[in-house]
Amino acid sequence: MASFYVTTPIYYVNAAPHLGHAYTTIAADVMARHHRQRGDDVFFLTGTDEHGEPVALAAEAAGVTPRELADKNAERFKALAPVLNVTNDFFIRTSDPEHVKAVQEVLTKVKDNGYVELGTYEGWYCPRCADFKSEQEIVDGDRCPIHLIELDWEQEENYFFKLSKLQDRLEELYAKHPDFVTPSTRRNEALSFIKGGLQDVSLTRGKLTWGVPVPWDEKHVFYVWFDALLNYYTALTYAKPGQDLREEFWPASYHLIAKDILKFHCVFWPALLMAADLPLPKHVFVHGYLLLEGHKMSKSLGNVLDPFEVIDKYGADALRFYLLRDVSFGQDGSVSTADFEKRYESELANDFGNLASRTIKMVLRYRDGAVPQVEPDPTLQPDFEGLQDRVSALVGRAELTPALEEIWQRVRRLNRYVDEQAPWKLAKEEGRAADLDRTLATLVEGLRVVTVLLYPWIPERAATLMHALGAPADVELTDTNPALSLATAKLGARVPTHVTDLDPLFPKQQPPKAA
Image 1 (tube, rainbow, N blue to C red):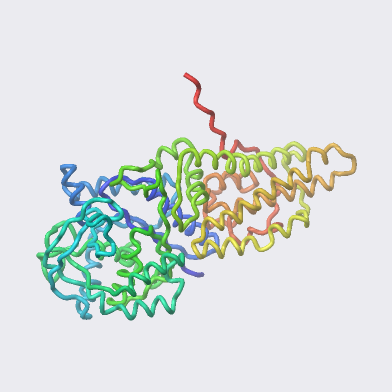
Image 2 (cartoon, rainbow, N blue to C red):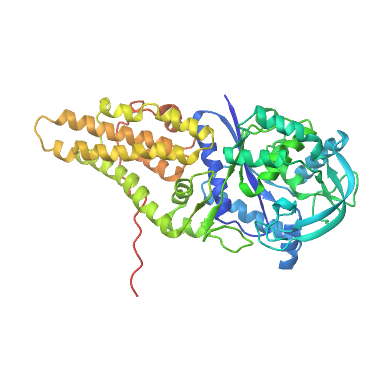
């Protein structure tokens, strides 16, 4: 059995979760569910980043302690996962004492290996990014390119991480493993940063108290980014009490991140692991921004959409589908309520929902719910040949939008097949019973195949449909259920024997009544 370990970034607790957080978490969940369908042993990690200046400043503004703010908002992030139908195996908080201990151990090893020295830092600093900015990263003279606020000029005594000593090893990593960072545009961006010449960076902060204490100097705490980056590794030391999961799951298969934290995950993170003599993750996938009115959705900019509101009206599956369908995963893309409603109506309600309803109702009407046990129509086989392998290969590279398009092409093909065969006409014609049997069996089997493949994107509605297609009603449909195994996602692999009626999978929304 292969192992698959996928992570999201850990999210700052300086405010409540928004749609941008849901986006990355849903993407990771699609990958985790798909790999469970393959039969892989999966570990899926998400959590919250609770130290550093952004949290301390937000707590001060709210009149509470950093711990109180962290406790409050960590629970809000935890609550988001089940609402999104997300199946993470562990939720890490960087205030966990086990994480703190492991961070101190790893960074002490980095120091012992000769990659830490005391010095004085002077330069531009963004308190919202918790990041020191180089001259190349500044816009409009002294502004943060992400938050558009004026930067602070900081000067303080810090311990430095000797990033410059690892420049050659990082360049070698990128040369030998061109898929370490994907997509290629993000790889090129990271490599350009490295080849531009790496400077040593602050490992600790002397002016803060809210952070992981430095064991060799109590006047300092570790710079929040180094504390946070280590969560992917430290979580495996205590996620399951009494077990050390590092041997099975480290190095990670995929870290999913947004492009604003590329420098930390694609440069600092591998360098830190090298300095600690730890294996490097296999892949870092960098996705773009969800844009609203031309800007990245951000708590600090105040332009966010509430995922809870969308879910209350349309359900979690509709949100999951839209985010990975409308915006190609890996690129920037605009989202809007109007686009969401259009995609919901045309694809979920009409293409898929209507296909499911029509197919089941015709089997109920013409065969009393019994699915004819005949071979699917061979004319449809070429359309489904190799589909499972193509979807698997795309998801394996975190290309989630193209994978969804591969499946959706078959949803549309099945709809065309209904129109081509016109079962309602076959039912009225003498001597066409065998043709009707083949058509109904083909539609049910094709519907089953696309439903198995769609399960990682729309797990709740896919499970509902699988029950209507004959899966026992008293059996919970999980990713590891044989009925959802990726091995069965082939036309003719498992023709259902009967169907039962079901309500519309994606009910059409009624327009608001006029006042």
